[in-house]
Image (cartoon, rainbow, N blue to C red; front, side, top):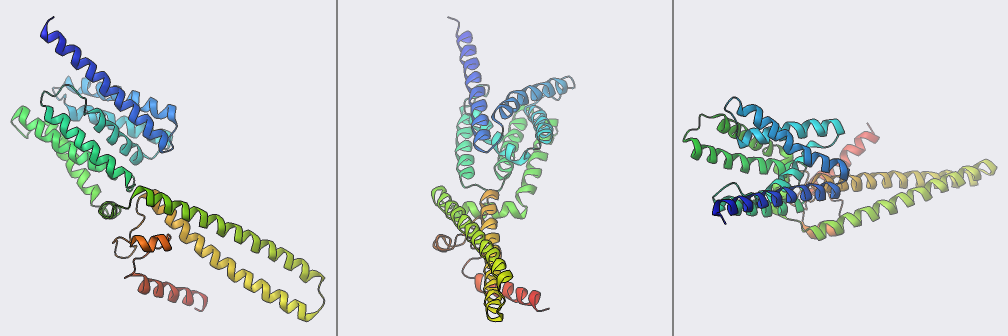
Length: 323
């Protein structure tokens, strides 16, 4: 059997395997992250076609390259996510992971180092995603590494940095780095250094959800008591009874306000888990001690910042009540 024919068959087989891994991982993550499973699969199938069409068009001008293919994919993804009102950053995170795992089996780079590098990249990105950083962090990290790789590949291929491919790669590097320097992504980097284990994060999330439910039940009971007090007040003619009713109602109203404040803190903590910023102090952005989070999962500040910031909040509340 012709050796070149065998190599061609192996390459085609690896290409199919690579594409299947890309489809499966996109569908798996899309479903896990709450996207419509049929539509996310449509997006995964159509996106490479959009990239190939873009590559073909630019090739007519002598500008065909990997960067052009990826640019076509990116433009279509932005169009699709805008049309479906999806989070483009979350979809970007999904594609970063699915493309990195697909490239492990990609057969058209003769240097096996590319595939090894892709395996390492997928492992790193997957570990990063497990820490639940802010949406877009995985994508911009992937964009930076991929742009650096494509820049080096283009330079080795053309022996010049003055090419369309290298220009696109430099734009990708600059854009990715600028985005990662934004405050929310710097916080995500701090969170990754903190590395709150996924099982502990799920435990704290469950604790917050249970606390929220208990607070809601308590608030409902107090509201019911207020209704009963109103009924008692209507049928009471004694001033003494009226005073007791007023006192009880004031106590209930005060408790309800405290419950609402607690619910705001719990909702804020749950939102941070969703955004990927949970576990960081709102003041200094340093990690909050795990023991403190286990006792007080809605904590906004670390032990060092808490006394000062809570004192400031109490002072602001006092000024609001007594201007």
